[in-house]
Length: 192
Image 1 (tube, rainbow, N blue to C red):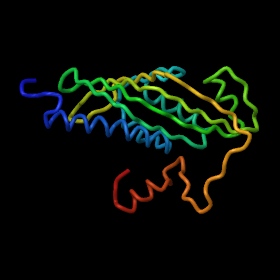
Image 2 (cartoon, rainbow, N blue to C red):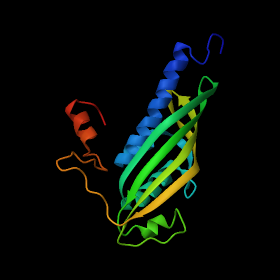
Image 3 (cartoon, helix red, strand yellow):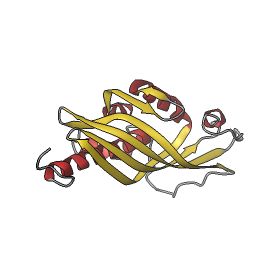
Image 4 (cartoon, rainbow, N blue to C red):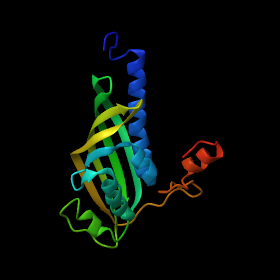
């Protein structure tokens, strides 16, 4: 690695590529873009979300089942520390805030997360602060997750008596490939 430091042009390019992988994950899971979820990981990757531990196809099926009761999801990242073990391997610690709204009837799904009973006729908001600790690896010039571990640091769950309405006339986010961002991408000729 002679001539390479943490901020050489090649390392800065690697940092930006790794950052892009992490951001693409957030969009994929929040919009339920299952094909893009798979593209974030190497084929032999391993995911440890706590309740799910295993390969990526299994993780996607686990998310598909879990998210069927989640009407809103937003993953926001903040601190991202990237440490390079060598030219093709990096360790990423990514701070994450996740806000999700569980629709009425989701009490069974929530019981996987907490041991608290919720009324079946209520919306429930979950806010968690966690970290992804990702082993990233570059293969054939492309950075992807090789091993992801979710470390949960804090969680708050609130049962709502009523869910606030969105602003009249506001463009509403969708949890599918018809969300506004995908319509704009198609309009601009950006591939999915």
